[in-house]
Image (cartoon, rainbow, N blue to C red; front, side, top):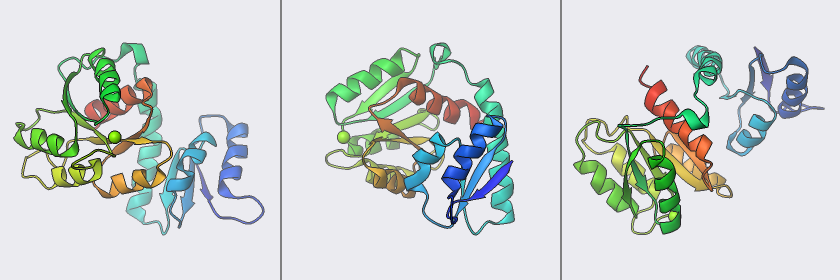
Length: 218
Ligand SMILES: [Mg+2]
């Protein structure tokens, strides 16, 4: 495992990681540590072959959980099915999206892998549907950020405050256009668990749902 600081003179952590990765191959875990907000370098870090970004100052508990996560993720990657092998039969997703074409495409992609999909055309409707659902009815929520009446951030924050037993644990996955980096940050603050860039990459969507629905419960 290699721990690299991000801000360093001469060569920064990203470049260091990139060069080390090209030498060591995929087996070694590379972690970048930073005291700065790392949302803006998340994508670049991934491309450089960084497995994990960590905030400084580092606490013992955070270090241990980061190491466990970094090492665990490798095992999980090996266990993930190929895109064509995903089967979510019997699982139910709540899809909140205001754009009719995006909705149609996402529903088709989800249903093709066995999901039952309920749709909401805005955040308010999503909140209403979730609040009326019995515990465990939905396995995950896919939430567009920019929607009329109630946006995805507000809807997610409201869902987290509902009295439903699974309100705090239901995976909520934000869907954001690539350009809106601040949305990713805000979606975390609103209690969302992950984000998918739009246009949605089917493989990434299945993988993310798979991780939350099947891996989290293990
Ligand atoms: Mg929208």
